[in-house]
View 1 (cartoon, helix red, strand yellow):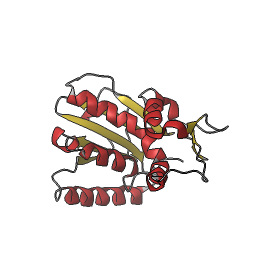
View 2: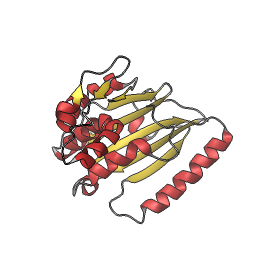
View 3: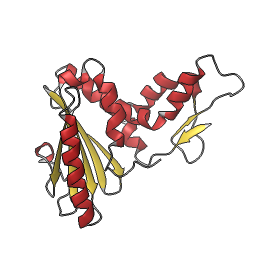
View 4: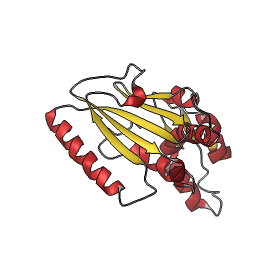
Amino acid sequence: MVSISLKFYKELQAHGADELLKRVYGSFLVNPESGYNVSLLYDLENLPASKDSIVHQAGMLKRNCFASVFEKYFQFQEEGKEGENRAVIHYRDDETMYVESKKDRVTVVFSTVFKDDDDVVIGKVFMQEFKEGRRASHTAPQVLFSHREPPLELKDTDAAVGDNIGYITFCAVPFVHQCQCSRHTINLVPHVPGLPPLPH
């Protein structure tokens, strides 16, 4: 059995997490064991021939819990649905992920809390390197970093302000999430280096 517990899973459910997991895992998805949100059950003695694919999908469980949020807002953008409510996922006690769609892009914003001044410096250096690396790929989403103040996308929210607060913004334009690049964005965003690791 493979299980995962995410304290913010109810927020993911509001964006179709249960339906996506049923689509991906089918009969392997079972009632979650006590203390967990999602459980997968495999009969190791009777795995189908495509067992490598099954093992890979099991290892992608956390990613797939998040995927419904991104798929939903990529779909909104493709359909030209602007003004849909922003997704707000409190992935840590004091850190939040925001996702929204516009006619010309999907924007994902992570707030992060720096523990000390050294973290702030390291974060800025990392983001500069990240932006430079992004220039080498036309299919990579635009990446922006703001310190102290939230980006304009969050101007109408209660997003935190402070010397130890940083915001990392990804802007995926239509070219990025057509040609299946949205799948790569979904894979990468929850695991951006420099962000606090998402809880297991």
